[in-house]
Length: 283
Image (cartoon, rainbow, N blue to C red; front, side):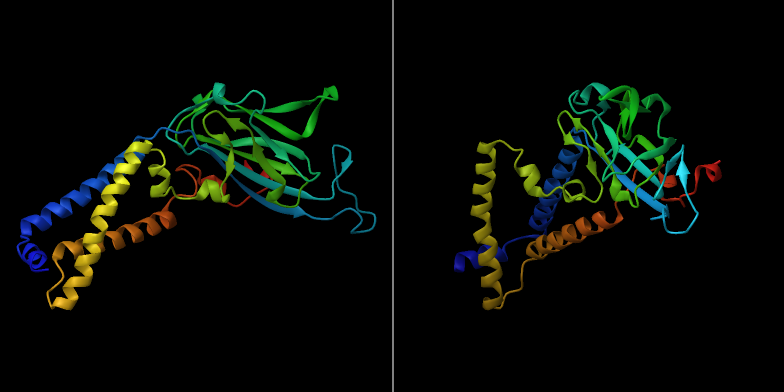
């Protein structure tokens, strides 16, 4: 115990600075490592405003139809699609067996559609009706294929639809991207979750993980001993211990703040949150 007291009492301000800079170095290494990771991450978000609900039969002698077909529900929706990852998504990255499509589900259909925002005209986005496999002369009313050349980080489109569903839950984007998986919707836990240290830890080689874990287990008892021993001995807690605790709390609060302040959609997608109006009023 006397030896430990002597070591603690001999710690100089230079030692505190060294420990502080070392911790900052680890933090910066983690940040730059995260930024260096290349990944494709297509995400989408949906907004829908219901204009007419359960109209058929609601009022005597009133029929609402579209191209000769009665419409019970009528909604206007916007779908934003963008690449949240750092690696370019090319059309060749889309699985041929499961191409990227926007679909109306639960028995609802699309009535009209248009692209109202493009981040970059060079992306070559286009919405194409899907041929009905049972009747090649017609198109499916509840599926549209999304075609493009490529889109980089934070590039994408916003599509506006009129559809016969009564909410945004009737619209979804499907499709698989090589190296990523299915296109994910904002609001899904797996799409919104902030990457944790364990996510990056799993990417490290097994042998390196064992070494890091071993070093951690060696160092941890020292901090436990210091925090337990110093208060009982009447000594003041070393400054570097306070620094470490301060940094841990700071990182926790910064992570929370980042999750709150992080943009829901990329810059330039402001029209997505604007008031939804019928097509004739959009200009």
